[in-house]
Length: 301
Image 1 (spheres, rainbow, N blue to C red):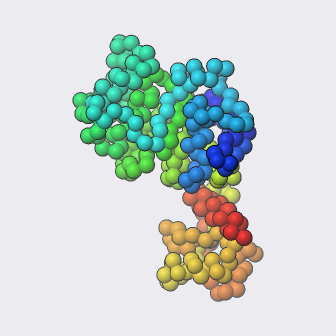
Image 2 (cartoon, rainbow, N blue to C red):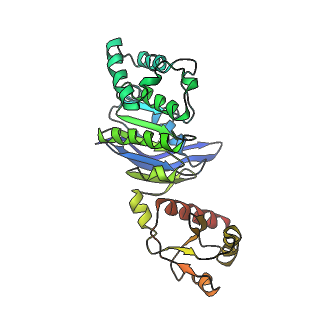
Image 3 (cartoon, rainbow, N blue to C red):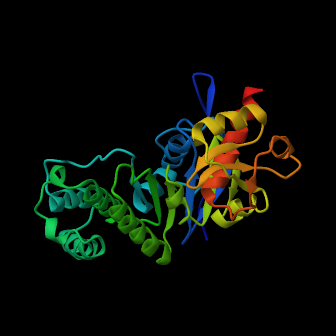
């Protein structure tokens, strides 16, 4: 079942499009990831769905015509910056947000007990939020967003600055919520995290330039991803390749210089005696980088 559907959504600021005609849905038990550089429109999209800003064009379909009432009752939200009260303890923060959502004391105790088990924050219930590690702060923020049993969770870059172990634990929690049927809309700069999403939207200047599952987006590069074998300095080589074939996406990968294209498109490099290894198995990161480098190259023409 679809929880939220947006169609033709558009919003401009100072004459420039922040969101430019995007269409997508978030269904129950699915994670949708918004991926793109700063200024791509990720946060604006979330603010429009939450009713914190208003679209100039397009529609936002929710299960209830009274959007503001439905959002208050059924949406949990984590903004990019930690927004809880640092001078309150873990439990005091939870109780504050429980009162905001109108939970009774008995309901709060029941829900808090589950959240402590779910987040493993029980040993820190009396610690002030400001004294928590980055990972524990994000777990607390997520717990506060879950107090009222939302159907839709909206998370704006929730793991930025979080250590790898805490990031894994956070995504384990999201996977558990997905299995229980919650819909999740998340933005992240981390392509490894995006692999956990059911659907990924690549945003650029407010437009969706690609969308699909991580596997579908990666498969777009099958047979077209190569590595240049060389013992030269990779950064100097990258600049040399860009001069030789300026329209070929070229970037530093974990194993050296990676490029994308057909062998016909890569002919200038082959004729220049570069040795290409591949085709290589593509990753979501390759799909992202080749897409946005290709856009940058076209815009530079």
